[in-house]
Image 1 (cartoon, rainbow, N blue to C red):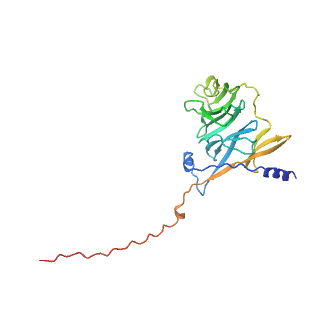
Image 2 (cartoon, one colour):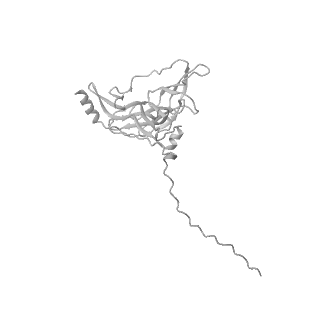
Image 3 (cartoon, rainbow, N blue to C red):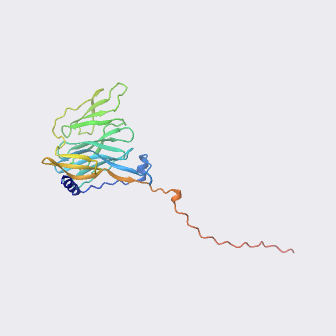
Length: 276
């Protein structure tokens, strides 16, 4: 009975359809060779969930088994029943932590995942997530990740940058402060040991919502706690595409059509001049 009820509830929650175009230039830029015989499976990764009243946001990336293809940001205005993408996908990028300080101001951490993680940035919104603007953490290219960030107000925030390996001085972690809502940052501390942001508990993730990877159905379930039970409101298939090139093997190519024979012009005998 329990299994039947679970299947019935899942069946009432249609899967959210995401697509990936498998454009040849995008696959080439990612260094992928996807053939008909060996297609490249494309997977969804959901890294974080944030709720804002009736609105919800999911951040993550699309990737193959070997490489990250693009970032993805999803938003819902109706509690997870329908979804849109409020920001264009960023090639080779991934999105991670989300934080909203109120109903208007929010931030999402991101970085490039082509090769070693590098060039961290923030997506910033001041209109509740309708429009997002990209703000790089550094002007120059640097390897590393945004390990954690936290905003106490729409203007003031702190951020921990992890180089992923120590520099020549043995330092690995850097703490930055912002007084401009994440538009600019000032270095405050450098350390070889892990740094932590002292933050309040206000604005932490809503405990009544979660994202769960469901292995049997190969999907992500966005779930809402009702009393003591979790109920799925959205289901996202983990595998969303199989990329194949349009190449055709030589032996499989159709034989060339016979060209019509050109008429052969008769050879005229040479004209001999009469002797006078």
